[in-house]
Amino acid sequence: MTHDTIFSPAFGNRPSYLVGRERIIQQFIDGFQTEPGNRDRAVVMLGQRGSGKTVLLWELADRASSLGFAVATPTVTAEGMLERIIEKIQESGAQYVKTPATHVSGASIGAMGFTVGLEFTHEAQGKSFAYKLTQLARALTDRGHGLLILIDELQANSPDIRQIVTVYQELVGERLNVAMVLAGLPGAVSATLNDKVLTFLNRARKVNLPPLAFSDVDAFYERAFRQLGVAITPEARRRAAEETQGSPYLLQLIGHNIALRAPNGEELTEESLQSAFTAARLDFENDVCGTTLAALSEKDVEFLGAMALDEGPSAIADVADRMGVTKDYAQKYRRRLIDAGVIEAAGRGRVSFAVPHLADYLRRDWA
Ligand SMILES: Nc1ncnc2c1ncn2[C@@H]1O[C@H](COP(=O)(O)OP(=O)(O)O)[C@@H](O)[C@H]1O
Ligand SMILES: [Mg+2]
Image (cartoon, rainbow, N blue to C red; front, side, top):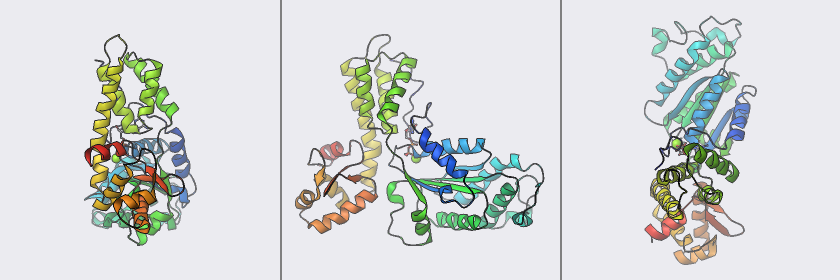
């Protein structure tokens, strides 16, 4: 067994090495640096469980910090999130406001309410989230610094999210140097709600986190296994890279399980490789497939179950037949499941699974 100092298969864990996200990070960073109000400054990041959203948000936090942004590091949609966001910006931005503002723009006339740094006066303390965030954005903008808000596990129907979006739009209207990334499951934005938040989210630039490229995964495995002293043939390593299907979580699970089974100095056997794949798949099925299905309606799952009878992509007509419903009815579920990122269109009238191992999982545990 190899002591694994590289792989860390757990949600939200920052990996020792970030695989294959350089281009997308650069796109985000370029967006943050456009002129205030630019559309690329507010981005909705969508991806299935384990696609690396949380990790990417933290990476963006680091990169933006080093560019002089005051950053509200990823805050999960939950109780007290507004206060947390204010605190995080105060903490991260304090270093930029040690001196009084040098040039005083129109906006800064209102930038008061602070004692030292970004600490609010007693009076300002009791004011609204909107007031505080606006004062923070003004104080930072006046000193040539930006403000970045990162939201994780987006729930579009949360009242707090509605507030954040509303205030963000006001700040943009004032041309303040603000940016925002909201990360969530693909279904998070397609809710049937039709209000201001949804309009905003629908108009914002959307980034679907793509699977990692095979070449990036394989190159990472090559280096990681070499560093850990895991003896694996190039052929077996490539099979491992393929087995990840580009999922960051599977990449961690498979790498970790291979390291656990690697004998000291000797080459990894075929048996150990298979056993590593199985162990990784079971964890993935539990943590991703199971959770994904649990969040769907019974009919949605029935649709998926009907799909799982096919080896490759399924024809909607067949799925409808198997469910004993009309094709129109089946279309409705097709649309919902595509919005939820669980399936994808696969040519005319056909769909395929978009979550690794989901088909097998349904065949085995849901039949
Ligand atoms: N680019 C990446 N390179 C390597 N590992 C990654 C990468 N992105 C995510 N991971 C790993 O994948 C797993 C899931 O990542 P996470 O950010 O929690 O996903 P999500 O928030 O989308 O559910 C974690 O173990 C994390 O360390
Ligand atoms: Mg996450």
